[in-house]
Length: 562
Image 1 (tube, rainbow, N blue to C red):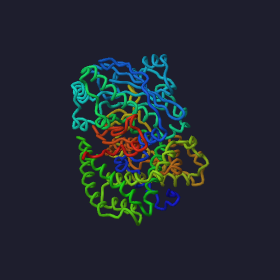
Image 2: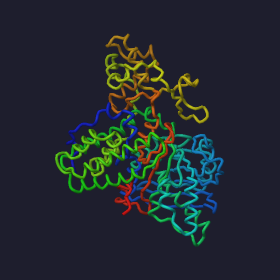
Image 3: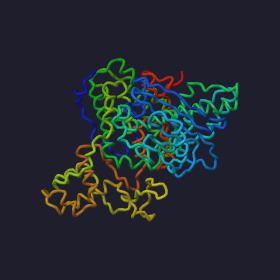
């Protein structure tokens, strides 16, 4: 095992990493939360059961799926509904869905299921309790669902091309956790080993949802076709993930959780630095990288989007992959710090999307250097948000300048620099982004413009002596408390702040969405506008009956057919 203490190539600086142009092209990696979960479940030999499956021929009813680890069990309680076509919507304002779910802490009793049946299908309109860890809902991909049911019912397998074109039979439109609608707060489960890494409850919920969706479509096909119905081929089932539609509600998360987001980025940057510091690679390590590069190229070929921004990015990425594979084919990946040389070449010759793909891929041969960093990705510092009132004005100005100096010279009165305003919708209490000069929203603006606010705080400090305690300044100017807090946080969390203007006319919120979703382990990002995106989750992942340490390792990279 290599000693990570020998790392001597530094982490990439925040000024490079924290630009939205780079955050908006991040890729999944060994540290992504879905992969952390499947590795753990396989290594610990979790068991999976389906104690309840009461679904009728129309696909209506409920089911329970229980996952049991070394110390405790978790159960997905799923409700399948007969949803009229005119009520099907991916928007957060929808009030009915094809399926609704919760992740129960333990194994539910009949009374628990009755209570959940009265609340889970209502989603926001219902209430759950601290015995539930997440609340979610999903809609069918209607045409593909009908195709799969029809083919299986007639004793045939679905068309693989149609499977790959969509990638999922159902897509979630929300997976809520961490105290929403009465669910358990994060603190209740944070000290459990299997929940230490962020979003493990939500990732487990989606993993079990994928199993339920496979079983539901199979059940409906058997109900329709009877004895002649076919069983879905496991190789085709593996190609089906769970889709997700994610909009603006998720974008502010990485601004509102600066320490947590810092920990995600810092863990990945530390992993990259460790691998770049590897002096020599074994033939097996080089072969692993080359094999996964080939599989990544195949994945990118299958990646489809009609959105002009993503179409352009995919064109550049595909061209860059051709150049990358040609370079790797003739390169020495064994000696003289091979991964550092490869990354430096990528930085000089490829666009940011391909650079970040390389940064993720070089981590794959090194579980001993990388995987342990996942335990550092949670936010375990409750004191980080406390303002140190004794800090001097001079120290505060230096802290602000260290992170936000790029923003101090911007003309914040220029319409292009403050064109947008974040607010919360009255109907669904969800974040929204409006046009400041076209809509009456300025009075409802949320504090989601850290750069503008930091510049204002910095200039307000001009009138105070350097040795003045910042508490004195804040007593007179409490509106700057958030900026001072963020500046102090950035001193201990250097990757906490996006180094871009989050209210500019040029802002692409989908970059913020992809930054977060890449850490979930999402693939095949497909923007539907500049404000919401569809993704695939667990595509290629082993189902419970196939989950082993080997199958849990590189499932996210599809293998090209012979």
